[in-house]
Amino acid sequence: MIALTPHLHVHSLGTVNVCFALDDDGWWLIDTGMPGSADAILHAAASLGQQPTGLRGIVLTHHHIDHAGSAAELHARTGAPIHAHPLDAELIRRGIPARETLRGGPGIARRALMALGGGSMPRAYDPAPVAVEVEDDGSVPALGGLRAYHTPGHSAGHLAFLSARENTLIAGDACANLLGLDPSFAHEDFPLARQSLARLATLVFERACFGHGRPIVHDAQARFRRRWA
Ligand SMILES: [Zn+2]
Ligand SMILES: [Zn+2]
Image 1 (cartoon, rainbow, N blue to C red):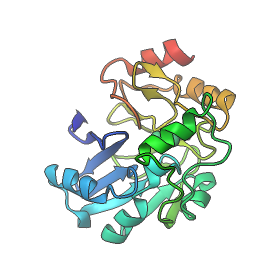
Image 2 (cartoon, protein in one colour):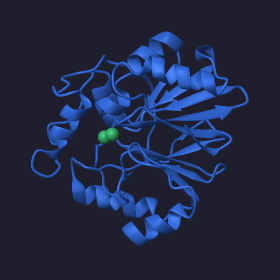
Image 3 (cartoon, rainbow, N blue to C red):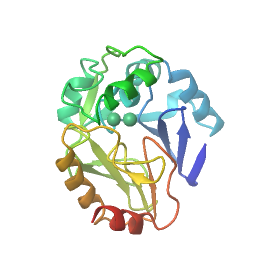
Image 4 (tube, helix red, strand yellow):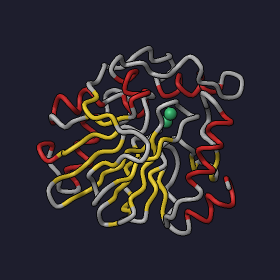
């Protein structure tokens, strides 16, 4: 677990990260990992002093199985409403792991998904009821207001979130920081993803965290500008 700020924690589930946002009246979860991650997530939340009954909302950056895979179970166990962009909410409600149009290098997207699935391509995840649709420029009432940015390309309904109060960008899979700040391994539409990254590079933030890879804890905006502006 990495504390980006006292209120924002990034937790690695192995291949993918989730974020915990802590408020005085409860906590929020950003992304939910692969299917079967609920116990690990609730255990990590408990280590931060947070109980399942205190979960105020589940926020999904996009519909991919490594982010939405445990949303249904976490919703069932906590009652917390699931938030997502309408374009991906459609697929989350049907448990679709990735659109057919998701492409990396030759076979990369498929191989990566197979690796996440332990060798076999995960075909579906439990459909999850998205209760709150979040559009571009919308906000989620965590951390005094998380501003949503529709950042399509990796996925048509991808959302990134900016916490002005915590001075942190939650980038999801808009990009990754595995061997350095790089595009995600696969995209539905790469030129569109680059446009989304150029937009994120105009925002003001000190820190950034990602679905895959380590957070950047200083000067993250300058790194984004150098890479994507
Ligand atoms: Zn993804
Ligand atoms: Zn991912």
